Length: 460
Image (cartoon, rainbow, N blue to C red; front, side):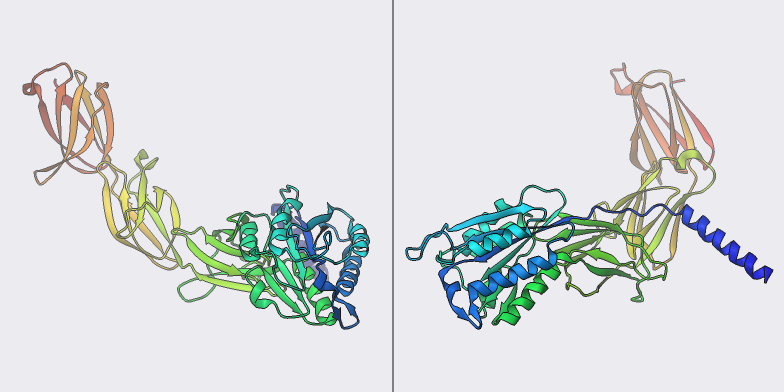
């Protein structure tokens, strides 16, 4: 019994120590969801629809819905109406007005204004949607949503689809919701936003509830980074979620495995179509990601990775600051510049390396394989000390079987210069700065060995 109590105490102490060593979770500020109702008060809304006119039924159901969500935190509402200021005919195509602007706790004002509005005009859908851009005051942490309720199509030669795309592209609103009353307008409004058909009162109430639920609730998802066996074992890569329409970056995460060894669950806005950039080397991209509201979404992409380790033989300080350019095999674009002494992760495949030593070392088709560390080790360099009696111009050449290749120009202002050079055969040609004849050029051959210093005296 004593042993059990002791073990229990040790487990409690251990768990508390572990918890204390964990950094505090970052609590991101909850955005304010702003829902603008664009309501149809055109003359056609006075048509009979089951128990009453479409106009009265819609006003009643909207008011009942507002009662149920009036006190929600981080939520604001506004009301824009069209077709209610001028009698039809004649047709007045700028008949739209923001009747109740956004403000906390204004659901009662919207209900009150709905009671006094009369339906009598035309249907300037595109113009009303365009004017709604002015209804959302500047806000750094807001989700702007439009719910368009109508029983008819555009009557003023506008293009609601083009206006909707413009508003989304400019990041003013998210993809709108449209509820069509009385008949199916799917073909006309599908390009505007997410369309819901309400052919009767019951369908209208259901559609409105679904729209509000989707507008207010986030949805969970996970990103599976697959290895070469198709298992979601890759992790710890940065991920950026960008709104395809506006180009706005919505989320940045570091991919994480949870306590069960599975990709961690993310909470995202389901109303946005995303591009997901996985910041591996080279990067992996999910071009189009659509989230189903209220349903856990799992998205997978191939991201098999291995490791590249860069080492230098010996214990020379020459490795400090030495870098290597990494490119995909056959490509000219630089993928990464990796420091010697570091181990970095890459998508599996073949890579070309260019070590920025003197002379440079080129390595082709280096294979990076799944979960394996490929180690590249170069020889320890030697040290060349150039001692000059005069300032002057010097060209250092690599001597490869009498094939001389320029690798470095000496500093003309220094009389003492030290270089790290890879083992090999070299030749230096030098002329004093003040000499005005090629006859004063001297040359000297020398050998560099790993870990050894070689003195080269110019103009003794």
